[in-house]
Image (cartoon, rainbow, N blue to C red):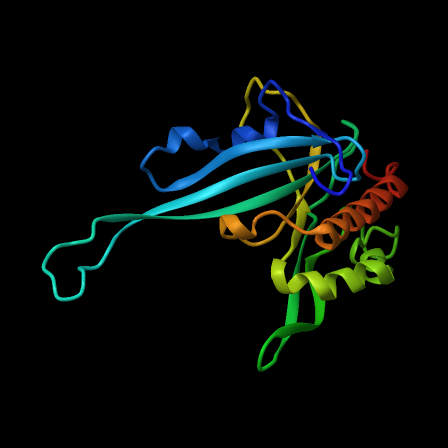
Length: 219
């Protein structure tokens, strides 16, 4: 990985990789497939997974012709960021996403403002008993806000939610319990720049600190 982040590739399949078929097994079918995953070694983000969505469509006839142009494959890519925790940690129905206000200009657009929407609590305890609202520390971090104002134009929508592997399988358990995602992208736009990666790492750092502060309420 770039930006001084060390990573390794597991020889065996990780648990979250089994949520999707291997991309090579999709063949000519519509669907979402797993491309691969990395374990990060010096980052608050524990794992990155790359997935690919493909759809096949019949193309229109060529202009002035009665001959069809055949089948065309449309494909989009996404990176999933996973945060791992101790086996004893149990995250509540946590699920948030960004809503952005975009200011459109003549030559370029920019993010004017954004907010988090959804269920921000890590526990199922009544409101006010513990500080389990993740949005509060995310909003209070000035550097994260600066990065999000700059990077959300490219990422568009960011969601953060509780994660559980979809399938029982003979894979390596990662204890991944929170997933951070953005929108589907074209392959050329998949890999993020330095500031976008810093944004995701800052987000992960704040979330992990919040979970650690609540560890006695999440077991």
